[in-house]
Length: 211
Image (cartoon, rainbow, N blue to C red; front, side, top):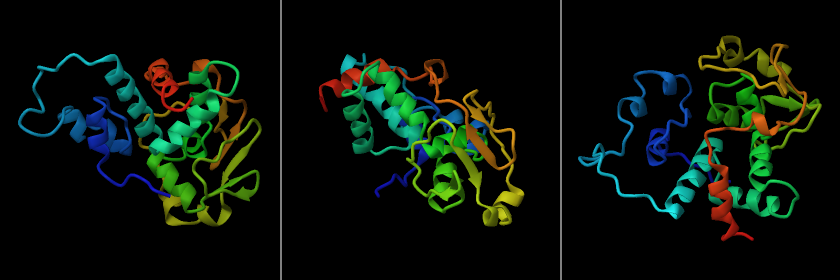
């Protein structure tokens, strides 16, 4: 499946927001976005920005979601296409489903320093869900699911040396008290969803695209 392999810093600069996709470096003063939070080039640091249209704001927030969760355009569009057919708040439905992604749960549960790292670990078969190996980052967890690092992987150098080097506060719907293990206590509630994404703008964007 296609995936983005370019600069993570460029993505942050495109949406004018630190997406913290580079692990500990994203929180460091040495991070390129922290030092230069503007587009490259001689005019990148100018403050003479034009007024952003409503469509431009919608597009920007859409990109924030894509880059935060590491999605391709078609993947995000499919999330909204399905959500429009369900009852309830479309934006809440989409964000809840994105939070339930296995790679996101592993990151939020403190078993990876970034979603990108979590995605790579899942792809390489490091985790079991309810005793079954799952190597699909987009796998959607459900209430009661038990996520564990495979026994043969724990003995590898990565897990023996692993340290959480980014600020982390495990959400209340994930139990991370047992080492190398996460349990999904509940599905995320609306108050557990990201507050820094204007999801309403993205709903408006896709309401013209996929309905």
